[in-house]
Length: 69
Image (cartoon, rainbow, N blue to C red):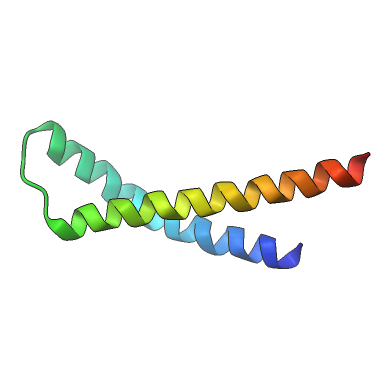
């Protein structure tokens, strides 16, 4: 359980690092500006981190529900 909490904290920090960049990226695209490949890779990395976080949170909630029964 402690490992899951540590993983959640680490992933959450990574996600917050990319959120600001993602907002800028979205703004550029909506204005029709060209996007740098590294920006696209950052967005993909953000999405992957969010998926990991969701998976960990799902496992944590599943364990919590099992302990409450």
